[in-house]
Amino acid sequence: MAAAPKAPSYGAPMQAHAARRATQAAMSIASSLGLTADDASVLHNSNKLTLHLQPCDVLAQVAPAAHQCAQLEVDTAKRLFEVGSPVAALDASEVFVWDDYVVTLWTYYEPVTTQAIPPVDYARALERLHAGMRRVEVPTPHFTDRVSEAQTLVAEHDRTPNLTDADRTFLAGTLYRLRRAVSDSGRPEQLLHGEPHPGNLLSNPVGLLFIDFETCCRGPIEFDLAHAPDEVADLYPGVDHHLLRDCRTLMLAMITTWRWDRDDQFPDGHRLGIEWLSELRKATAR
Image (cartoon, rainbow, N blue to C red; front, side, top):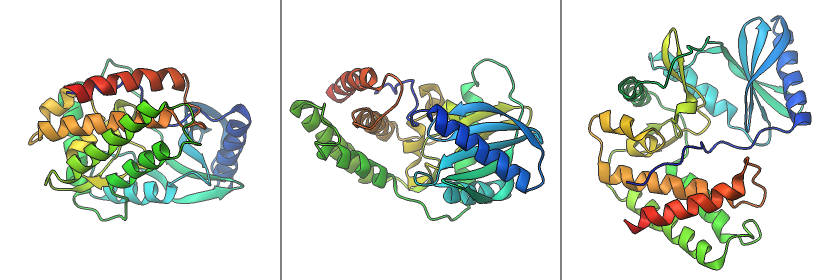
């Protein structure tokens, strides 16, 4: 089975100026709603900024308006919360716009400082999430749409100029073959989180809660499980392990492709691109 790389696939951190503007956007929106937000501490900085606003004790997520799926995320989280799924609750069920940024407001949960989440708890939480997702209807892309984005990136030489011809051919062939294998598996498809890796799972006094639904898509559950630790998939009932292996390798091919994007700003991205290409060759040789 292909080992999933430890680094998650979310985007590069906002630069200092953009982060300051994003923080200003969150505090301004909070103030307009009558919330007292005198301070904002950064909890996470990637393709969107996650802030803890105080003393109102609200979590704000801010993303550039041109590169976000905030409405999908809010609609999905709201419906999942209503059916009792293990998801973080919204503090306000709408998307706010400030200048070039969109802001969403969520309940802040005090994290539990413990060791890694036990795989059995992780698997149960993901199983509950999937059960809830089968009960809601939201318009989401298919997992193949995300694969298509990677295929387009590989095909456009000017966007991936540092890929050698051999590596480009290898990536294109791997993406095509595995996309087809997963699509033709015959497994039931449903709404998925899209990236339920450990970074998108909160451990807090309430229990385990999933966050960040901007990557939601439709596909077999094995596509979600490909983002979770191996031990979690081993404890999840009814898994097609052959399909899971294909999904893990497909996921590795996709995030490897992102690292070769000329505009990629992921920390140490070039080194990871080389390392993951090597891992991908080993995985496909098995």
